[in-house]
Length: 425
Image (tube, rainbow, N blue to C red; front, side, top):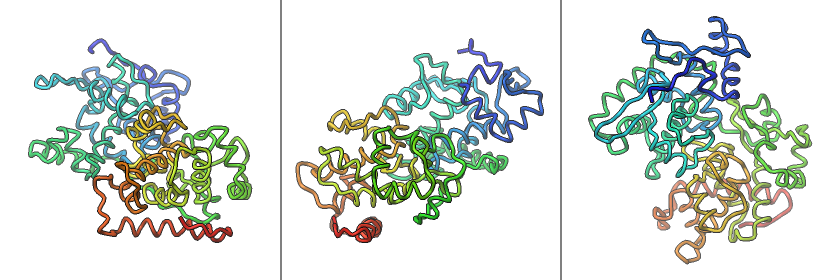
């Protein structure tokens, strides 16, 4: 481990990540002030002992870029920055060893090779290549990416949405010690550090998205400056894009907003989170069900209503749920490998931020639930099971989730009637 040495940013980041750093206004200003120039190698800062470290500005940029690319509305960049302060003082080469567990932790966020392998192989976090050589964990972007993935897993541990305190204390001491007195001092330090962090205004990374407008006017107005991969074409196959253009309602909406083949913009809310209009969402659902006959007993209006509930139509998902349909990677991978649903490949969590992929596996899971334990299930069972897990269904109570679903469903049934159809589930 000690043989690893980083002198320049170029030694520990990919070229596209370095370009992204230069695009951050505060980073660019900081680097130019100390004599760095674009196109040349960028020096890493060093402490009095000669160890490289990230400045707070650089750390905020790395966290912000990772969250915007992969965890928008799911992980707070301030959380990542505060944990980095506590775990390593922002030193990319920091290493610690636990004699009791024989666990080595590495990098800015102190990720162990064991955790890295589990996140990559079992949960599908493969946006960054993790080689067999654990020294790759010293790379700042990879390390922060895996830390965010681990925090996202903690956020939804045991299918319960966890508090910030639970997440931070579990990160420090494991799930078992999330409520143990031994992790309480860490939580208090975390709060102090987080409070002292500089303003993140320049990075524009919030902890929750705004609810998108449903009007066609809002759809066209929100298509402004786009973050990474914020076009339909970058997340959709050519064949599926052709199906979208052939859908009369989509064609009408896209033509009206000035879209062109090969570069169709996704709509964005005020914080530039990409989302689908209701017309686009319904079209995706209809295309998926028309193309894949092995998905039986599912209606497009039901898929749309569930998407409204789990993601509010945000392409990257909301909270702990990934993608339009909130399907996690292990479930999608299981449906692909064991359930015979092979209409789309799913090789990483990032694949589930593609509208058609998420919709396909959401529909497949719903079809599987409709025949859960070999019995034909009611719509109420399927919806409750989809949202809370089949083991948590209680058909004796029509709680707020079911009422919320009925409300969301009514929007799409009304749209159907306006278009001249009387199909109701």
